[in-house]
Length: 253
Image (cartoon, rainbow, N blue to C red):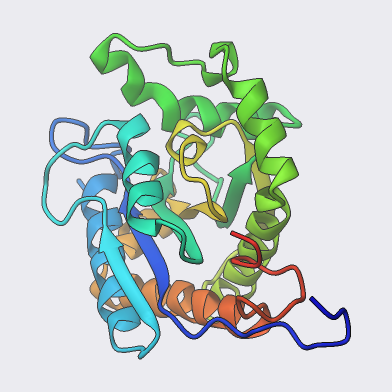
């Protein structure tokens, strides 16, 4: 191909897979007033899907659409199967908790990479805990294939694009969330491991905080969070359109 010719722009659908954390017998974190993480995550995930389904160029999937539990490793597998050879992103919705430090509050977004500090390791351990219910390892770092997966993600540049997507989510959330903005984090999160595409896990706030916990249970907050995350996804594909020749997600996928 002549190097001077412009790259052919991708005109097909962008796939967005939205994952509501936990579910079924796994409630996730429990708030001070009975707010359950699994319910917060599901309502936000549904709202994100509804918003993005209105966009002309998106095909949207939910890993769960009711109060059921989907095995953690299966969620990324589903996303990769739905993606096929199309450009896609994977968004997993969660809420944080730190009962021994109830002053903790704010929002943060993770992408898949080795945890760098105790906080990132603590959050990764909490979100990976449901693996133990099925008799699976709760430490994905012990998985023999993880090093290979991380190397593959780097080779495919998915880590880079995941970090960029995480930055956009944080930027949009900061426009409405009382905060603080805890920034982009990284961790070995099982739910992201098998999703071979730009993938992030969003912690929308702390259920253990006496002020923020009840806020997370309010439909108005959940709707704002959904709008923010949906805007970030739209912006991501607008800034880095597949087939633009910029090396963005979907180029050579």
